[in-house]
Structures are given as structure tokens and as C-alpha cells.
Image (cartoon, rainbow, N blue to C red; front, side):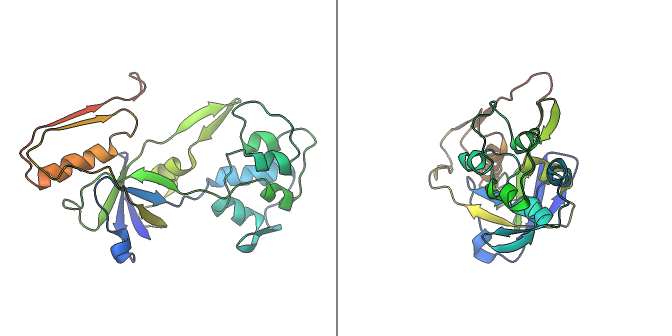
Length: 233
């Protein structure tokens, strides 16, 4: 479990609490974050199917209110083969998400059928972006909020907007460390280091630079980083 701190930048800072050695990390490791879905997306699902939200549904963990299950337990975006089977969908347009299927005319599934078509909400893995030498007791994530349009409506990344917008400073967040077996600095601090971040983003490379600085590494460092859109990134 971690306590969050935020500012207007893209850095989310977590103060570690209650995890002990389980939350010790090395540079190159990732932080698994257990997100909570956006309340407006949760409210939209019962609304389009004529349900109210307090209906009781059965999860693997036991009974729960539909609205609670949608908020913290179920993926509200991803359509899986299980979704198509549970909701008797033979074909769907590419990229169609859960809400798009629920908006089909004359489709009014009962609450349990609705839940049976949704997969469990998955944790998100983010590269840890500080060195533990420079920020003991903290973990930072460098996150860009995902926002886009699909089928004429605004969509958002469930975890990125949770971290960047909906998570209040001081809130408790469920987290865990995902160890990396092969993504670490060389032990020899005199070796040159070339870092290229076209896919992983800047986060782990920021940690590498902080670690090299904290260790007084004498080897030169080059960082090459490219984003997708020159006009807006």
C-alpha cells in the first residue's frame, strides 16, 4: 500500500507504507498499481441498460452491489471472447469497447449477465522513475494521461487518468513491485551508457540517470528519447 502525492506535472509520487521489504525496489523494476474506474464511466453502464446500480451480483470474491463491482473489480473497456459469448454478440466493429456493445438497440442484459461478460480489472505496470538512493521511501511514476475519441465520444485511459486526475493527494493506493531480471545498470560505473527510450518512455531512463549520479559514475551518459507527436507532446 502506498500514499500518493501529486502536483501539476506528470510525476506521481508515492510514499511507501506498510510493505516493508516487499516494497523495496531496484532501478529497472516496475510498480503495479491497482486502479479504480472513473465514476462517470461506472454511472454510464447501468444507465444505458436501464439498471439502477444497487442490484446484487455475484463475483468470484462473493456478492457485491453492481455499482461497487463496476467501480473497483471489473474492466469497463476491454471486449473479450467471454464478453461476446455472454452477451450473444456474433460480430462487432473493430475497436468497439464495452460501453459500445451495451448501447446496442434492444440490448438490456440483467445485472449478472452484464457482469459475466466483463473481465476482472487488471493492475497496470509502470516503470519506476527515481533511484532509491536519491528518494528513499518513495516511488515516482512518470505518466502521460491517455485521452482519445472513439465512435464520436470521449474516452480515457482508466489507470493514467486515475493517477493524474482522480487520485487525491494523501489517498491510499494498492501497489506491488514487479521485479526486472535483466533491465538494470552495468555494475562498472566507468562504462559508457547509451539509453534509448522510444517505447518504454522516459521513466526508467530517468531512474538510470539518477542512480549514475548518486553513485558518482564516471562513465559518460547519452539519453535519446522520442515522443509521438511534435505538435502536442
